[in-house]
Image 1 (cartoon, rainbow, N blue to C red):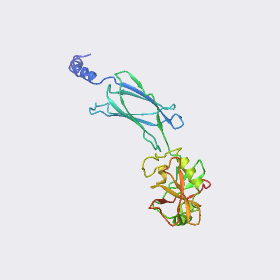
Image 2 (cartoon, helix red, strand yellow):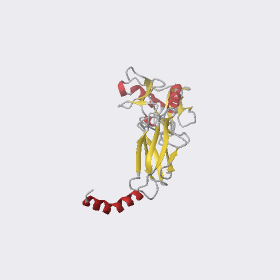
Image 3 (cartoon, one colour):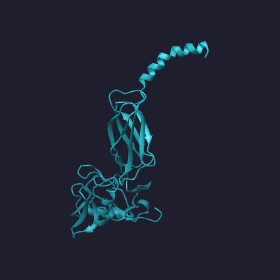
Image 4 (tube, rainbow, N blue to C red):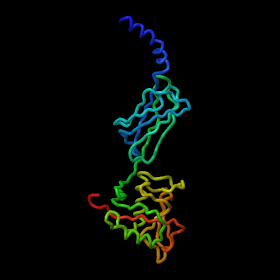
Length: 257
């Protein structure tokens, strides 16, 4: 080492020592991401954001991907700092997260419970047609207007979406739709939520949908998506029941769709 390099090294040494002290080794965090059936999910983004008031440069945000067995591992979290850990995947309909306090430098923290992701049970075409693979039925999204039973029946029969062929569903088909939604992205029926009890893809903004079935000459059956387990009742066919009646048109799945 020549004299110039020696001088540079001696001058830089105090700064190197200071930086080494200011940048701890960091701690580790590991966990797992699974689907609702417990199957490990690969390629899910897991993000750790430093959540405390004090942010440490170089330790503020980390992102990793899950492995084939659904596991993830963070390296180098700032020791003793609070982090918000969240997961992101295409098509997810819940957004689990948790706050953790990172371990001491060099220590590993293992999360006791996995992150569980839910995904829509339905396929949505570019023109908005919703296919239920479980039942083989196709659905048109809620047009967003309250209608009487007569209006709902006319709307479904005249709908040209995807080549037409639509009709009002039976009560059994509406119950099947409710059941399928609860395999994917239902919303808690106990909360007054615009999409309560049905997958958000349907854009269903209220309480019940008309069925094709008449109870008698003046009333027709409707299906409530906000009830626990679903439920039905009958309303006058010429009433929109205080702006709550909606139409969800249905048809059999077409070949190749």
